[in-house]
Image (cartoon, rainbow, N blue to C red):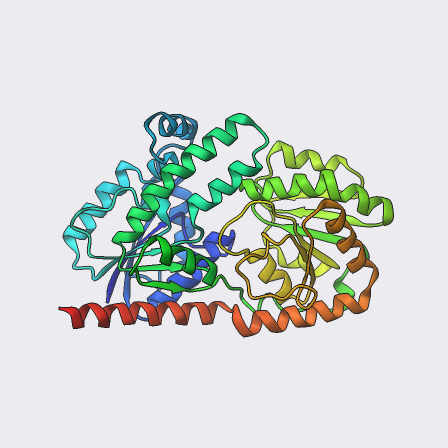
Length: 401
C-alpha cells in the first residue's frame, strides 16, 4: 500500500501526541510505503526533527501552519462564524495546496490524518480516509468548559466544542477507518457514526525504556507530575494540586518534594515553585530520570480525553500512582490494585500521603501496574492492532470492488 500520512508536527519521542504518532508511523511503515506531510509552526525546526524518520518513509514534506500569532484571531473568528477555530488555524492553505499536489502526483491508496485538527483541507478527490483520534476533541472542550475558571474561556470552549462536534462527526462519518485510544471512545463513536469502522489502538509505552530502576534511585518523599505544561488540562491539574492538595501533603510531610516536569510552563505554573518543596523544571531532555526518583507519581487531572501516557509511563516503571477517575479514564486498571484513585482534594492528598508512608503499598501497586502495562499497553501491541485494521480495510475495500 501507498499511504499519505498527515501529522501536526514531526513524530518525535517528546510529547504524548508525538510519541503516539512516532509509534504508529513506524507500524505503518512496516506494511506500506509512506509519504509524510507535516504541518508545522516552525518549518525549519520541524524539518530537522523529521530527519529521525527519514530512513523509514519514502518522502517528507513540511508546510507551515497558519502563524501562531494569529491564534487568538482564529479563535475570535471561530466564535463569530460558528466554525472550529483550532481546525481552521491548523488546516492552513499551504496544507490544502500540498494535499492537492501530492494526491495529483501520487497514486495513494489511503490518506491517513493525525487527528481532526488537520482535517479541514481534505480534497474531494481524496482516496480512502483513515483518521487517528487522540481524543474526541469536542468532548475535551465540553469538559474544559465545565471546569473553566473564567466566563470568557467558558464561552470559547462551549462554542468551539459545539462547532467541533458538528465538524468532527461529519468528518469521521466520511472516514473508511477511525482509530481511537479506548473502548470507551469506540462505544461513544459507534452511537454517533453508525456503521463506521472503528479500531481501538491504545496509547502505549516503550516498556524496555520505561522499566523499573533500582530502589536506590528513589528519593524519600519525592512526588512527580509529568506532561506538557502548555497543554491546558496539565496546567489546570498542576494548579489544582498546588492550591488544594499540596498544602495538606506539606503539612503532614514537611520533607516531601514535588517536581512539576514538562515543557513550556506558563507563568501560572512557574509561580507554583514559590511554594515550599515545589520545583518546576520546564523543558527537560527526558522524563524517565525524574520518574525514577519518584516515590509517587500523580495525575490530578480534571479535564481530559483519550488516555494518559503519563500514567502508563509511571506504571511501566513500577511507580505508585495516584490519579483522579478522569485521569485514568479509558485504561483497563483496577483501583487499589494498579493505582489509587481520588476525586476530591482532601482524598487525593491523603492518598499521596498514604503511598509516601507505606513502602509495601508502593511495591504492590508498582508491581501490579507494571504487569498490567506490559500485558496491554506496549507500543508494539498497538502498532500490530493498527496494521491489522488497515490490512482488513484494504481487503474489505478490494472485496467490495
